[in-house]
Every structure is written in C-alpha cells, then in structure tokens.
Image (cartoon, rainbow, N blue to C red):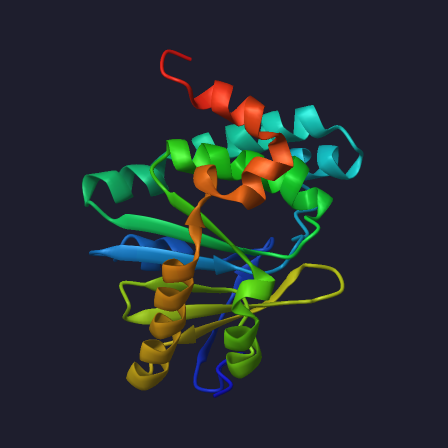
Length: 210
C-alpha cells in the first residue's frame, strides 16, 4: 500500500529548512522519537559545516557539524530528563555518498554521544518495503503522530512538511519504522560504517581506555 507522501495531513510551516513546530511536538513526547532518513544528501546551505563540506574541507566540516549537534542541549536534555528514547534510522545506498562519509557520519557520532540510537540499513535490503510503500523521510512521535518530510529530490531541500494524526495511517507508518528498526544495525557495529572508516581505526577508537 502506498503510504508516502501521505494524503491525510495538515501542512506545517517551514522556515530556513526546518519545521517551525518541531520543538512543540518534541517537548510533548512521553516515550519515543524515531526519525527515518532516506536522501543521500540534504541541502544545508548556509550552515558553515555544510559549506565546508561542499568546499572539500572535510575535517573542518566534521568539526563544525559535531559542534552543532553537541549544542542542541534543549533537545537532548529534555529527552534525558523524560527518558525519551531517540532512534534514527539511515537507509544507505551503496556506494556511500560523499555527504554520508565526510559529513553526516560525523554528525551521527555526536548524536550517539548525546544518547541517540543511530542505525544503518542498506536500501537494497529493504527494497521491497520501499517499493510497496513508496516510503521516504518521516519522523514518528510516540507512535501517535507523524511528520512526513517532502524533499526536492534534485536539490535535497525541504519543500513541505505534512503532519499526520489519522490513527490508521500513523499505525501504518509505525509498522514501517518497526520493520526498519528490526532489520537495521547500530551504526558502530554496521559494516556500512566500519568499511567507510576502516575497521582497524574504529577498533582502536572504541578500545577500552582510549
């Protein structure tokens, strides 16, 4: 059954590439937050870290995106205080895009430090699910509401955010999130990530006492 983009929704306003009401929904959470990411590059023009990445300054990009994630104290503090589980599932196409290897993985490492469960899965391994549902990016709040994120596939810029609160439709999105969680692997254990950085480097980085 085609689920994406949803047809029962309320449009949310967007400013500077972000959903205006995101924190309102996030601070209303009681149990869990799940984000599913499909695009192999998002347009983050105007952020110094992304601009550094686009200019090929990968070390600077990694440093700046890490600082940005670590600075999201309100979000991660709320999650920790209220014991909200945070899961982000990245569907990866191979070979990996430069954006993933040299920019987004650095952000994910910081996300992990802040308490998120970052999980990776190959697009080829979930191709049937994707073909059957037409699924792309969405955020699931407490399995009670969904924000479907509609991107321009050519530019990677966010062009629409659709709030879904229809019970049956939210249940269908929750089933997709549950299946992607089941078949995905924690990032630091995933061959997708380990192969991208070199297993010897990651083993040393994660060794006791390092």
